[in-house]
Amino acid sequence: MDLELTDEHRLLEQSVREWTARDVAPRIHDLDREHRFDRNILPQMASLGLLGICIPAEYGGAGMDYIALGLASEELEYVDTSLRVILSVHVGLNSLTLLAWGTEDQKQRYLIPQSQGTKIASYGLTEPAAGSDVRGIQTTATRKGDRWILNGEKTWISLADVADQFIVFAWTHEEKKRRRDPSGISAFVVERGYHGFSSGTLKEKWGILAGNTGFFKLDDVEVPEQNMLGRAGEGFKIAMFALDQGRFTVAAGAAGLIRACRDAGVKYALDRKTFGVEIGQHQLVKEMIAQMESDYQAARLLWLRSGWLKNIGRRNTRETGLAKWFATVASERAAADCVQIHGANGYSDEYPAGRFYRNCKGAVIYEGTREIHKLMQADYALGYRVDRPSRCELPPYVATRKT
Ligand SMILES: Cc1cc2nc3c(=O)[nH]c(=O)nc-3n(C[C@H](O)[C@H](O)[C@H](O)COP(=O)(O)OP(=O)(O)OC[C@H]3O[C@@H](n4cnc5c(N)ncnc54)[C@H](O)[C@@H]3O)c2cc1C
Image 1 (cartoon, rainbow, N blue to C red):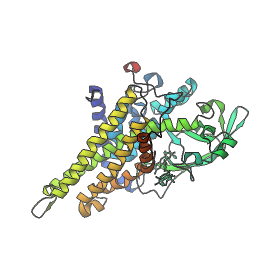
Image 2: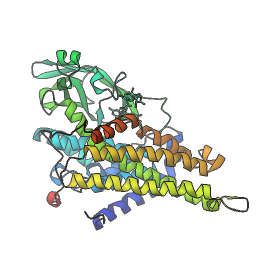
Image 3: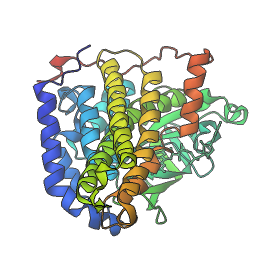
Image 4: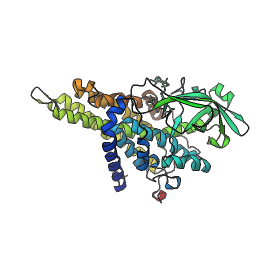
């Protein structure tokens, strides 16, 4: 295993860092305060190749590897979580799922425009009465000739009011729904423009305020048969597959957030004086900085391992889950300490610490809560949980992906 980044990785890291520092960082405080999602960020991300970063060139992507996806996630969340969320849902949860499970026709119609950034994509699993308990979803798809009729409501969906197309999960088997047998769930690609689709933004959200999070409703939405993703009954597996990729971006993003907390904490500790010395001289402040440093390094190594496993085509559900769990919990610790180092100033939006604190919490909840990940890791260790091969897997990275 080689932990050295390639020149291409470094170039990517540098270009995302420069773009966010120049074009986003100066405005993020205001966007956050105004609860405003800036759509102009999307074409900028597209022009940097980020919206198709690890998608092969034949499907309109930049053809980079999965480490590149992690690096971009880390750099984006260093500036603001809302930026990384775009990558998580668009590439992590949606495009990589189309790449692995989509038909050639679906890749042509949906994946290519997504990679090029002309269409934005998201993922609709959660419902008002079902988050961790995926089998509790109520959305149904009923067959009618060569179409499926979808009815239901999804909530807490990132980019709900922004995305053009969604992967949506619904029961296609009534009896299995009653028995909560997940082999009765199927996945569909649903376009915003379909008759009966409507969406809205959640107004009371208190974190990731520069991001869009909302709900959508499906009221007798007719979805053509060729938009079923995978086979009938594979929806649950597809949903879990997507989370393996989404969690990877969340893990790398949380590492970026820890680094942002460390850098802001160090800057303040070198500047603020109490009792005649910089606060960085106090051992209890050093302890907080040291914890951020070790958490950052460990979080980064964990997502790098997960990206490496993806590159070589090895199953990584366990490792990616661990990386996501560790990094998000550590980011909550780092953000709390970042506020603490800033004293009363940390309690004000004049400094970024408060935004970091609000933003970090979402990731401890979405893509598997802290508790669900804890249970998963215990179950792996105890031998209660074993990952079985799936009909479709994430394609390994091959350098020839580029043209
Ligand atoms: C900002 C944000 C963005 C999101 N974006 C998306 C998106 O794009 N697409 C999407 O589909 N969803 C999205 N979600 C939803 C997210 O995935 C769910 O909120 C998450 O899965 C948790 O579900 P829940 O909120 O229903 O909590 P619940 O499942 O109701 O859990 C409530 C509490 O009970 C605990 N709990 C539940 N079951 C168990 C158990 N068996 N053992 C121990 N504890 C348990 C949980 O850990 C939690 O603490 C988003 C959420 C947020 C906050």
